[in-house]
Length: 435
Image (cartoon, rainbow, N blue to C red; front, side, top):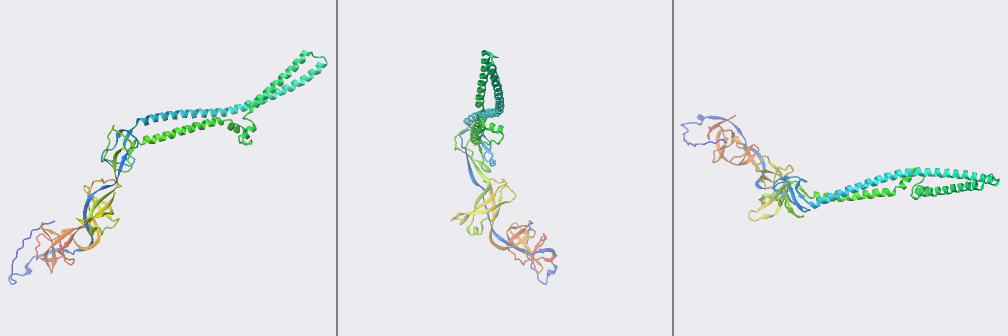
């Protein structure tokens, strides 16, 4: 702003002694005040607060092994804050892992036994086939022996063979008969589990592949052992999952994004379950409360957008009106206004001081001029206006800025012609030539 010191020299001239035609003429540019409409505004300030305060507690007792985040440090959701050590859970983990290894070995053995049982079925079928062949051979031998015995009897009657020889032939036949009976009885025992009736009783049709049916029938126990081993492993794994869940609880994690506040434990300390370890100031959204005159507060609408200025930050921050506090201060006749601030970019912290200019619904007409038209003497502000070709000073009252213009509260009217960038030596009463 230019500052000018004006000296008012009053000289009385007689109309006969000097004429206005002898005054210097100043060529200037003029403007008219811009007429605008603005809404009522009030300045206020406050301190940002967290939307919520979350308490962190532990569900399992133990010693504090490590603290990963310091006081007032940002922390992300699911980020580990504190790690607790519990020896009992460590021992239980070793025991369950040992049980799991043993159960897996038992399952492997059961699976091997099942494979062996499948192979044994094939071997048994081959053995039964051999037994059938052996019985048939014995039957052929017995049939031949029976024929030989019949012939020997004829020869014995004819006296062609002795009693001793006849007895040997008969004894040999009886031995074959006994051997055949024994083979047949052994075969009957060997066939158990491999007969058609066994397949039908098991609920399988005879039309399916015989080997497949007999393998299903003769591996029942082995498959049951596999199921038991698998169930045992499943049970142990469930126990391991439960243990892992409990061990995971040894890592106390943040339940939201925010700032760690009020740490109450230290490394090496024994803490019991349910101990409050610290708090998290939730900072995804922030809030604040400040007061406004009651008559002005009525002009604010829920959801109205507000700009706030944070100390130390150049850019304005978006906020929105949430609600009014229910009580009116009887001394100041003010009402509390709560605002909401989106902090998803996490640039703001609880405790930051801010200022704001709240805009109401009522509006009024204002005049604005460029800064270049204002003369600041240090004690007052003036503008030059042009009336009937002459310059005249008018004191003005300013009340703020509107974009690149300055608001004129009083002193001129919208019809006044104002000199822009007045020359430094321009005096009141000077003749004006408008460019």
